[in-house]
Length: 119
Image (cartoon, rainbow, N blue to C red; front, side):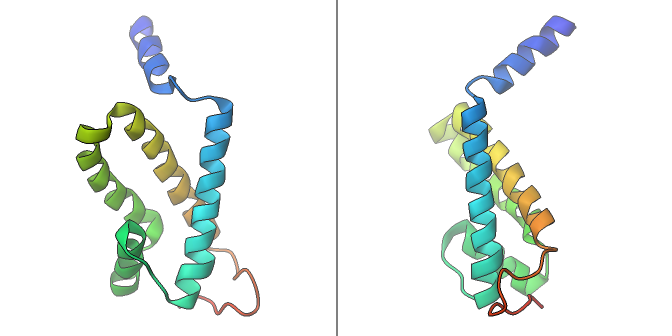
C-alpha cells in the first residue's frame, strides 16, 4: 500500500521544481492582483475565461474564488485531449493558487485611494 502511495506521489510531483512552483505562485499573484485591483475596480473586462468570470460575478454575485475553478475545470477537460497530462497538472496547481490568492486578497482594501471599493 505504501509503495502505491509513494509511486502516486512521485508521478504527481514529477516535473515540479521549487523554481517552477515559485514561478506559478508569482504568476498567480500577479493575475489575481490585476483582476481584483484593476479589472473589477474599473468595471472593465476582456474576452475569455477572465471576462466570463467577471461577468458571472457581476450578474450572479458569486465570488471569483469559486467561479475560477469551475470555469478552468471545464476548459481542462477539453484541453486534456490536446495538451496532455503535464499541462493539466501545472494548470490545476495554478488554478488553486489563483483561487486561494483571490479568496485571501478580496478582503483587502483597494490598492490606492483612486480605486473605489467593489460593491
